[in-house]
Length: 65
Image 1 (cartoon, one colour):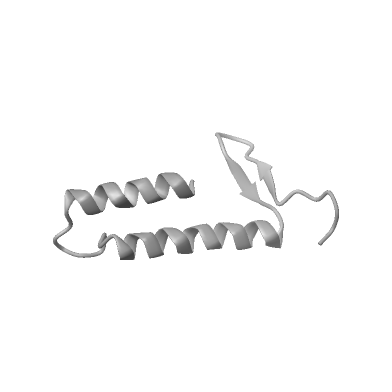
Image 2 (tube, helix red, strand yellow):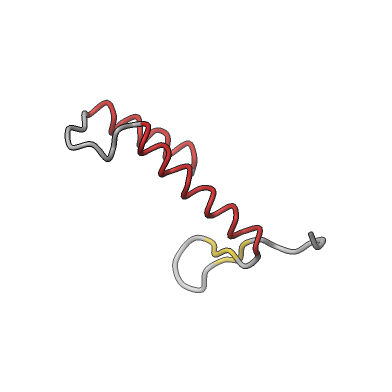
C-alpha cells in the first residue's frame, strides 16, 4: 500500500465520497455484502415480512453506515 494515498475522494456534485483505489472498492463491496447478509438474516426477502424485521434491518443498516 502506498503511503498517504486516499481511498475515497469527494464527489463533484452532491454529498458523499467515491472510491478511487482498489482498497476503497474492496471496502465498498464489503459494505454491500454486509447489507445483503443483514437483509437475509432479517427476512427482508420473504413475502411475509414483519414490522420487527424491518426495524431490525434498518437498525443494522444505520449501524453499518
